Image (tube, rainbow, N blue to C red; front, side, top):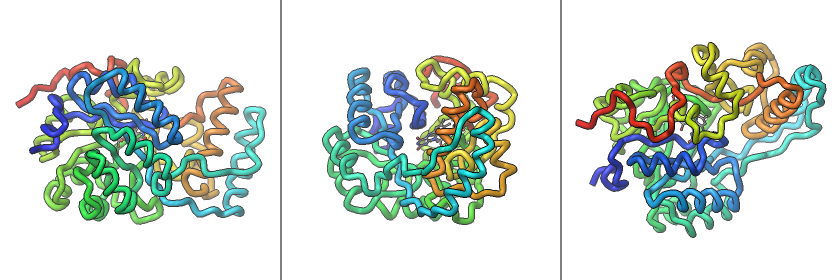
Length: 345
Ligand SMILES: Cc1cc2nc3c(=O)[nH]c(=O)nc-3n(C[C@H](O)[C@H](O)[C@H](O)COP(=O)(O)O)c2cc1C
């Protein structure tokens, strides 16, 4: 049985999990419309994840996806962290603030989060997806034993083959144009920067798994093209950021609707990992500094602190305004709107 049939989808679209942007309300609206809604719990602890799953379940009887971050343990390097904070100090000073004196690990990886595993096994969502890597065999066995269908992101054939070897059910081919964090397992590895089309075709030919195309798909024609390339579904993020069900704030929405949408950039300066977002004062500064950010998510604590301080001073140009290259095509429609040019075969 195909993945789409197993999930009972009438529309082959997965609304991307977007930590801090997607919401239970968005996931439920998308799932109710026949696609697959997602909630992202990579940035919260197990208790908050349980609440988000309960909230989503209260809004829909349909399947939804719960997404986890499986990043490697950050290497702590006090000298690098101090240099980074020093480099950021003038940016903080410009908004009348000082950087934090120390940084920490703000997001726990699912790789060693037993409380999160227990919470998922108790709730057994129909779909669980992984970003930044794969958990160990025992966790995968446990989730499959609970009946969860497993998806994982890949930016290369090697990562896709690792997904297959681990027993994942389908792979999300994340192209270079995609908004948000690049899911590469090792952010310091060589990156061939394959676009959605090349990566999707490569994985369809060689990965031995159903492929979900992702990156730059903004409307029904994009969906159609991805399916014609052999993908079984698409995962779309940027297209949902401006929806009323999104948690994006006014500044983010305004930036997405403006000129910056034409100039997205991949930056490590905000979080310590490559991520694509709308150009703003933070990404511009990141392109000029010689300082090297600490590993993800350590650098993200500094990035979030700078954004919070700047906002207090009325400056919104330091937000993590993630968006992909298709950003100018984003429309502020309700999440369940059918793509205008979509028609099933
Ligand atoms: C605002 C935003 C936040 C994202 N957060 C996550 C996340 O928490 N987990 C995840 O697996 N992918 C996340 N992504 C990446 C998406 O899964 C997907 O790869 C990307 O949105 C596809 O490209 P597109 O934005 O051009 O549609 C995020 C993307 C955006 C735009």
